[in-house]
Image (cartoon, rainbow, N blue to C red; front, side, top):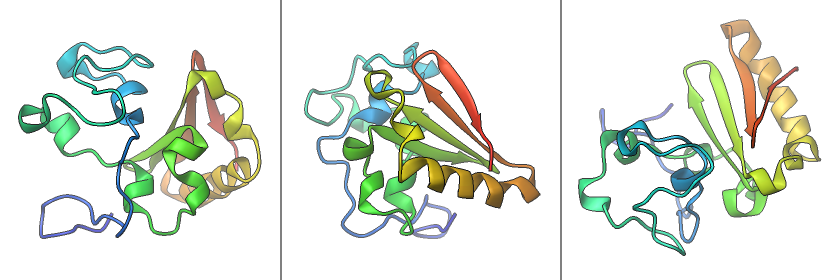
Length: 141
């Protein structure tokens, strides 16, 4: 992961902003707020934003989805369009899918890209895991 400034987080892709997307406030569980997965955080503002932005925990402060940091991802991966949010954890790629669109990751062009990424991560001991509602899948590459 490239850093934007020495030790100050990932380099962001110019022009890619969160806008009205709030998937990172809805899809993951956030322990600091006792927030379960697939439910909006109590601080999430409808239409985008956070009413605790200035005092948000490091978990939120340091997080950027892969679409914001990986310039190789095409526009089809923009979370509001793909209905998915991705992030890396070491050699693991985690994909969180909106429960209402649980099967979208299995469609083109997403599945092909996820399989290719799984093949790329395998030599490092990595893998791709997809959480879609209550379903958990490991993508084979």
